[in-house]
Image 1 (cartoon, rainbow, N blue to C red):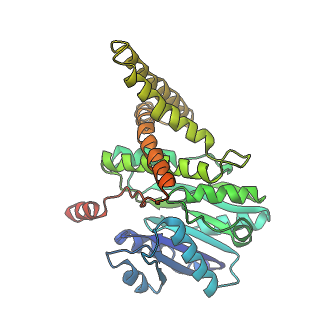
Image 2: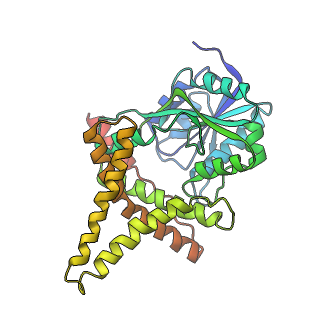
Image 3: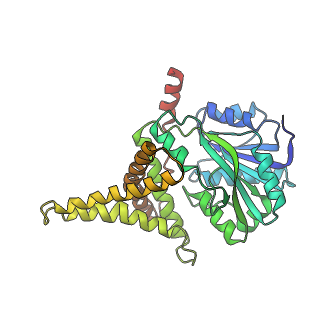
Length: 343
């Protein structure tokens, strides 16, 4: 068993994660100073099950919208109230298991470089063969090792860096992690991904509908982040937003709008999705993917631009009306749990 890291605390967030949450908490047992679990109004008894593991629990109320940023901040506040001397905090989603040795390796990296504010590692899908969607997500998480621009939901942060740049933005229903990373870098702190397994994530993307909802979340996040920082010179999310507008809105709209006057000739424009898929395929091949997987990956990501555009439109409507949309959850928890029990 590895030695306890007395200056590292953990914030776990979750909602109706069931057995996933227990596996997450068990993977952290006796390795850090303290674990706080922030629960977003679960109906499966998660708070009680976490307390049975001797974990401090913060239960979010429904008086305002529930989202990951709010959970992370609530957990952070309680953790620092209990352990004010902590130097590092690891944020992790409740559907992940932390790989032994990662926290010690990430902490050592932060100790070596005082200006480094965040360290992450390789997140892997727990069941990559359960569906093609799971395998695609596992590939997405395989980002280059070294200095990075962003991080995801699992990351070890220096408390001083988080205080200097600000906590998670609770106005963001999705995309709170890269936005926090953006402010961290703007405050002068570095971000690094190390060549160490970090977490195993049970993404549970077993149906096309869940995959589409996940892409809609991405489009929503790009749009909201860009709107939040649109006056700033760094151009946060603007390139991604333009890509969604071009491929997800402009291309299909033009092809369909001109179909009648061009006697259907404009529909040939939809063939450009094949060009985009080929570009994505070439990128994945350069990263070492198998050819068949790279081909399917490219097609799925290219067509996902349309769902990203739907998420963008949903965000635009929410911002225009001043009504914050509910979090776009992509998992069907009940169906997933029934499938697990049947297996």
